[in-house]
Each structure stands twice: as structure tokens, then as C-alpha cells.
Image 1 (cartoon, rainbow, N blue to C red):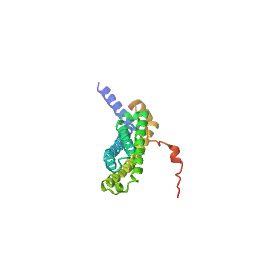
Image 2: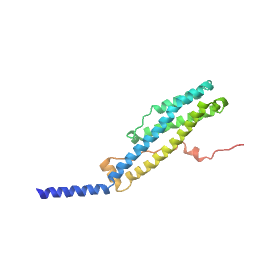
Image 3: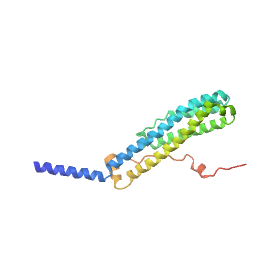
Image 4: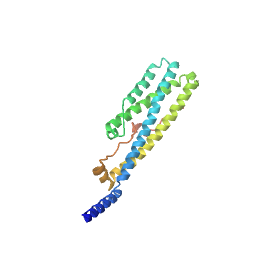
Length: 198
């Protein structure tokens, strides 16, 4: 009986040693890293969404007749708010694409709003507006940094899930799959250099 227990303990010990070589802990760490990076992306998008009502209200006082642009920003914000993407639902590429399109729509609406602002010198001089614009620009930069970190983290995670021998652990032991990443909405548009006219 004691000999059988020692054999079982030795077998269990060898099994635990083999787990460290199969990437089990590394994959778990990479998965947690992607979840944390995704949370930071969502945090920055939420910061932007929180700034928008104040920005729209400030512009509304100056440019009441620019109703379509203001409504477009508000509508784009509500579309973004309607999509809840968690680390668990990131496994759905269609939902991830829908989220990415909604965020792109909001970015586009904010760009149109900034074009409207150019028409109103008094608004650009308004201290509240300048502060909100500065915060929004800072938030856009933070979003870019958070997305870059997420892209890098997902790339490392996806390598772990796809490379041998950790792909065996990922697939058969943990049930992990490749996670989607951000893509460029219009690759043709970014490949074409902007036309500058004087």
C-alpha cells in the first residue's frame, strides 16, 4: 500500500513538472494579460463617452443650428453604449467587428463636430470648450495607446495559443482559442496619401 502511494506521489510530481513545460501557466498569464489590456481599452472608451455630453452641450449653446451634427454625435455615442463587449464575448469576431464599427462611427462623428467648431471663433476661445477639447484629445491619445497595448498583448497570447507545444495545452486542456484584434476600417483610404493643395 505504501509503495503504491509513493508511486502515485511520484507520478503526480512528474505530471506537475510536465505541466510547467507545456505552457499551462504561461497561457493563463497571457489570457489574463489580454483581459487586463482589454479592460484598459474599454476604460478609455468610457472616458471618451463621458466627455461627449459636456462637449455637445457646450457646442449646442454656440451652434444651435448645427443640429444634425450634434444629433449625429449623440446617436453615435448611444450606439457605442449599446454594445457591451467583455473579455468573454471577445471570442465572437462578429460582435468585436460590430463594436469596432460603432467606435469608428463615433470617431467620425466627433471629427465632423470639430469641423463645425472651426466655424465659431467665439466657441474656440471659450475656456470650457478648450478644456473639454483638450481632455478629448488626451483621451483619443490614451485610446490609441490602450489599443496598441491590447494589440501587442493579443499577439503574444495568439502566439501561445497557436505555437507548438503550447497549442496542445491551449486547445485540449484549457479550451483557449485565438482572440480577435483591431483592424483598420478602410485599408485603401490609409494606403492613399492625402492630397495637399495650396
